[in-house]
Image (cartoon, rainbow, N blue to C red; front, side, top):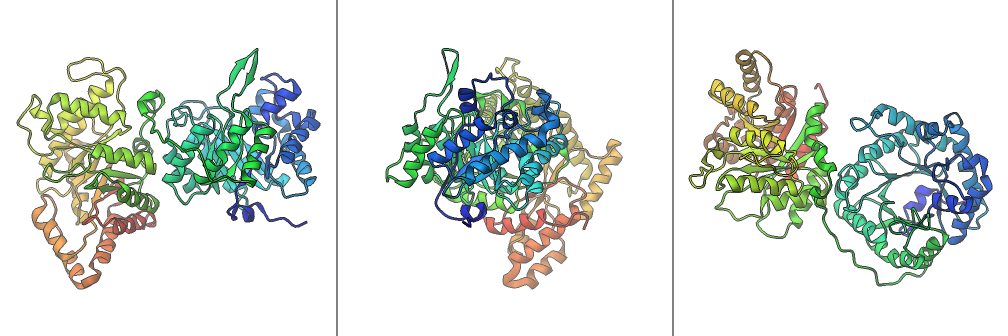
Length: 620
């Protein structure tokens, strides 16, 4: 009988049913110790492994996984079995293939790949290159043995999962790749990543199917699945929950969720977009049979998903991890951010759609601008939190000092951190003449408060705030200032206060930026080391350019640009994108990123500019 390939089958709308736990049944049926090498059983107890495969197929599974979850050089090395890696993996695949071949209906064999078991640097000893090599080695043997696809599962470390997917893409370019993350009870990965961010990164990595497994039962897994679907609607999804939280009963580890409960959740998983449904720890052929029944005889009712956003302050992990912006700055990666204004409503759907457009175009961050008091807008805090939690892209919160006294400043900083908003752009805002902190309008003072007080675990008075905050703090910079020496003097104060990066005023004449950097080196005796994300205005029209040139302090637009816009006529917006792209190309070697400021809320044009900047040839 000729069957569809797994890729062809995944293109069909009907979900596929995966198997359940392997380790749970091996321990139960083989009376094994928790310290035994499960993967070695492919050689020592092949009938035991094959029998579990056959039972899952009999229960109705369309997909079964090879018993190779821990078959990498590091985990096998703990048992002194690393030299048998190829034999263990090949035997594991053949046992699953033989069980599948005996089935009267199509059953696909996935090559199971789990975490390496050694933490990545800086938290552990393993380098990214070493991890990639180990994954590539394991997956190459799985591919040679003839698996229909690769499943990378039960990854608590988001970065490690991305490395595994990259290795799978290289070793198995023609096969479907399923990538599943594991989340803790607060809906964060164990490295502090939210579901939206995980979904975006995995989808961008090229994984065929992305999803969630292990860690939680059906209810929480459904919430995470829905968050992934909301963040990346185009992604194809999978879900394989545990049978609830494990309990120790009489010295044995038992899972409470019954088979019927899993069957009840099938409609919910399907409604959330799951294309592959299965089970993980604690699930058995009985659970799979119940889900088979629910798939074959669907009901119209489903269990409602109650989405609860995680609070980053409920776990210590995110506070220990630098923001993604800081990681990019430290790695010297060119970074693109786009400014977005909060909506004039409590409805954020349009803002989130625009954010998704910018993210998909290649933006690394979204700058959320605070708005003047005269214009009613949604709180920048709320807008930034919605963007991060729903779309999975980190934000930079603009933090003006206007209208805040000392208590308000510190309280708002704590509130921002509690919402997971840890990138700040400190800006002056309107003059503050009330309250007990009028000097807050000196941005260097506020940067100093954040870096040398709150990031050290204290408030302005020296009282403990419990745990130190972990803000990344940006300042403003005008590299085209008429008085460069004064700008450098102001910048010196911001650097002494601890600024981590700068958002630069747009420069329409690149030689002026080069001259500023040269002058800085002359005065300071060393090059400017502060990462600068240069402002980029995609000019919309001659009128727009005239306004910026005449009414925005620090902006000077050369006559040649006015002539280009005028000659473009109705195509001026497109010409503005070309001009901005050309300017950024000329400035790229002088700065570490681009800060795109859309004209008149035209985010679709900003997305075109982002795409042009991101895909510009390096060194051109």
